[in-house]
Length: 283
Image: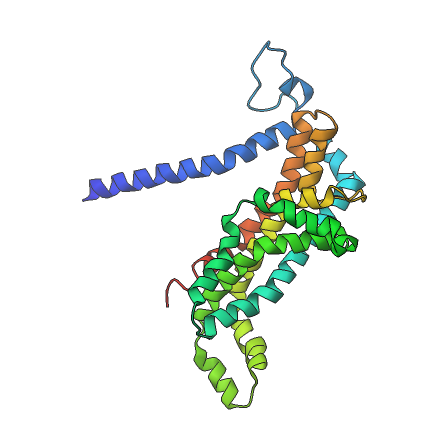
């Protein structure tokens, strides 16, 4: 029994190490290239590319961190992500509450239709969405608002699905007691249910934030016809390839700067993501 248990532990340990390596290795490669000097990535075939730079340098980090355009693009991405979260929570939380509390026919069909939005690839829906924002009366909206509204279409199904499971775990007795004491449905929802559901709703907000921060297709097509020089970070990264052939040091540095906030953000709020993903599984 002990031998079998030890073998199982060894197998699990190996699997954990492999999973960690699969996650850490790309980050290591990006970091290695981002601090590489010229002789570490241009070898001329005389020697293989080293696993660690010959003369590590942080010059490329200094260049981008001193670039006002980079900070302007980063601020725009942050605005879009926060506005997307606000839109999704304002619309998605009441919708999820209604689905969890009120019983009606075809409820399952409605939930499936909401989730089916994510069954279609982004590239198949980006053309009509971008056309709507760039040609119709919505053209005069600020680019931040247009991109945030497009991202909300992608994030709303996640919020509704996660929030519905969270609301179903909250006893209806809390609302009934508040109603008996004279509280309205709106008061019970905003003052009693929402505070209890905050951890689960935070998980939905986190998912939407990460989705908006990393999203490229909608951001690119909506801002392609815009005359503003400030663009979201994923589009800015693509623009480097369109303007010239950047060296791997530049690409790796910018990629790591764009990814680092998401990595740190996910690391610190992972407990909320797990609680939100498993909400409603155990009652």
